[in-house]
Image 1 (cartoon, one colour):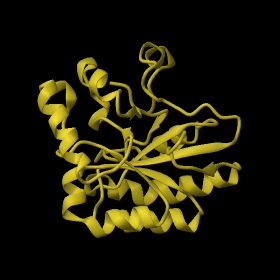
Image 2 (cartoon, rainbow, N blue to C red):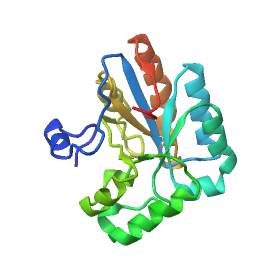
Image 3 (cartoon, rainbow, N blue to C red):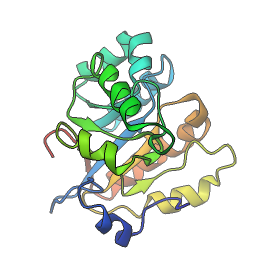
Image 4 (cartoon, helix red, strand yellow):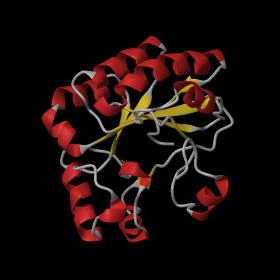
Length: 204
């Protein structure tokens, strides 16, 4: 599998998905998957606030159900949200009708026209149905923060290869937090020093 990015040729084979944002400005689009989490998401929000950064949180519906106050904090601080299914389903391993029902269940908790498939795995049949309602958001840079044996230095090098309009993926989850604590502050500082601003994907 591809690690930190998806080859451009593969991105071109799936043009209906959003891989990056077409912009001439030095803008980055930070995204956080799998939350909200009662401790980790507030920590992320504090880091973003320190750098004047806005981000997009692709939320698991069941986590929003369990932690509605954290979800409301995301919105109150003017970040964007997106649907990440209700049960964090792998589209490749899930019947299309079951997958669509799970996305619809998440809609009861998440109001957004943005969707990111968990693991980046979605069948064409699933995407075809969802495209009528959602922009399907993929990424330009993936931090791999969820890997227990992540080479932090390697990740930092790869995550600094962003360009204008790059969509960058982190995770506000327990599995990722050990790495996220190191990666996020350093990368926010680096990107800011390079003159990037941090925007949400809403309306992009």
